[in-house]
Image 1 (cartoon, rainbow, N blue to C red):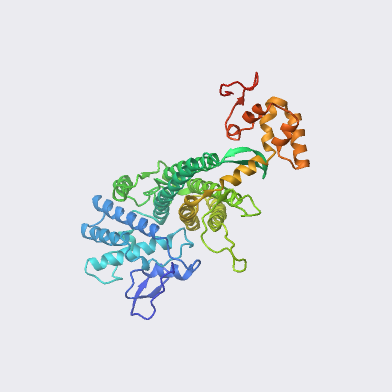
Image 2: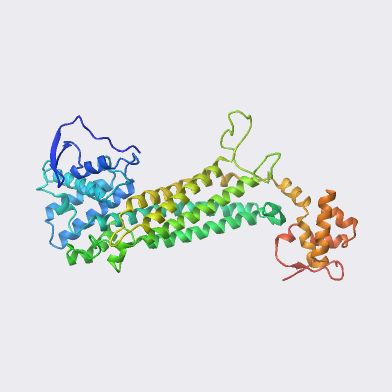
Length: 487
């Protein structure tokens, strides 16, 4: 999203701050401090995330309600602020939030941008003109009982909480899709591999079930991450001591915010700790990174299993989404797993930035929340988008090349592992080495060398049998009764 351009050709109004006077386009809702922030921090060229704008508006609304109840704000001013906040929450006036997501000042520019937009809209609601801060003042009224240092972190946590919930929804779709594929492929026997070398047989369904379990753990980690984000330092003002916050306001602000947002929010037990230390964001970013790593690993596996189609494994088919080459006719690439890989790489980099920013906090405040939020929001959102395209454009359309899988198992010497309980590791290793050297199927070699009776080999080397735990009992040869595994 392009950041809103300043409207220089419109009539101007004059505003002043501690730096001096500045002309502001007459028809905009932002004020002098917003404009200075926009001029100082043209870093990304992007707008603030719409969810954090809404979170800021929710906080300002809750503060107005609470301050009015505490007798600190006249009802007409509080009502006007609430109406202005409701408009922002509905998505109006977002073009007037002009400061860059990455900014100096620990988020002060963003907080004042919200204060000024809401104040000027409230002034209009009361019948005044923008910039007449005698009616509604950005600092004294909209920011009453607050500081950037408790507002901005709280807005960041609320935004993260909402984004995590959206990402969880996509992860649940992925987990369900993997479960369905696990059931669909449960009878497909293929060769398992370790270090990219033949190992022992596995069912394709078992592999997809394992992917499903990994995503199930990620969903649980996201739930724990949401718990980290529910705890706010709102009410602590500048450094967590609550200076300039009325006791009634301090006790009511978070419950009021929880009520109007319908989020399960709580106030931090120690507001000084919650203002100083941002380790919760390290934990959240870590959960997102872990999920990204899992998604990337699954993507790697799918690219390997679908490789070819003639010269690779070609055990599965990924849905063909687009031409794979501008020069090689008919080439189809695994573009969806590839984009998931790239999203994961970016999330891992974002996680390092977040870790360094949290570590760099000093004394009573961490000044680097803007870069933490910018990277964390990007990580969560891109992971959610990548997960959605992974499900819709890849996972749900995967098919198995059953005959190819069967052939690879039959031609592999890895099945000789199943003979170790009967003939010992050393003899099995010799047979494997000979099968490779002579390029003959292991079954042929075993039959020719009379290693075991044919009916015993049929039981022991059954691919399906080799995908389950236990040891087949072949004592007293093979009776008419079904063989049983010993546990």
